[in-house]
Image 1 (spheres, rainbow, N blue to C red):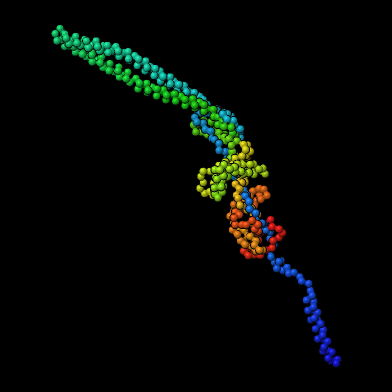
Image 2 (cartoon, rainbow, N blue to C red; image 1 turned 90 degrees about the vertical axis):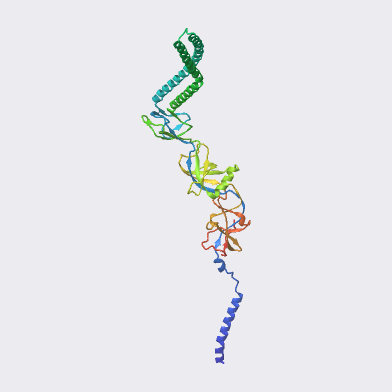
Length: 414
């Protein structure tokens, strides 16, 4: 009996242990498995909303002056005085440089004398014309008298009362008088031609005199418009030639900014200008924003450039110094049916990931630019045709982002 109990007791203990284990396993509480969820990346998402949004571009440009003039002497003369220095403000018609007038004054005296001489020649020719007409009448009368003398000499010669020599003398005198009449008639007929010639010479002389007087005006080199002096190239005592550069001046009230716009945005801007739409921009200068307006696009593309130059203007006096390089932000016309995405949502140049049933789905998009200000400032703008309103788009950076990757969305999507 004792041997039987000794054998049975371990079996009973083993059975009790197995039974207790089975009981505990069946009665333990259910614990939710989080292993699978813990391994899924937690990401942010954006809910798609379409609207008309104005894209923007960040450009870099240079301040230029369309009215930027180099003033030259125009004549050969000595520089007497320079009335401005670099950086001075000049007003229209202000004399900037004075040139010596001595040589020009002498030239004017000579040209005036030539005009007076030709006028005198013209008047003398008119007087000679009147005298020729009066002399022609008398010469014709002398021819008539000489013809009568020839007739008498011929009659006497036939009657032997005169000689042949007398008749020859009379005929010779008639021929001489006829020659004089012919020359006088030619001088009278040539009067209009001579008058035209003298008048042409007179007009030429007056033109040369006018040019000399204009050169006299050039001895005072004046500002062609209100502006600022960039450079002064001469000093008093210098000898200036007709092409010598004296002063460079620009109109500081009509400054522009030249900035290159990428080619893909040029058609939009050309259409806006053609439709008389106002295209705005802002220049950033030492934390100061200066409003700008697009006024025109360049007519040609410079070889080697990837865009077209655009010209912007601001309120007079608001732009900094000529030649400075500045940053500006251009606001393009609003595009309908567009979507603004954060930079984290864009992978590469044109790829985003939609989140469908907890898994990523790659989607190619067309970039339209980026937004500048407002609630959507700094976001990437894409065309919204490939999305439905309410779609979820991955808004986080995932190095392992691939098609089909399952993710967990953190919080509420935008």
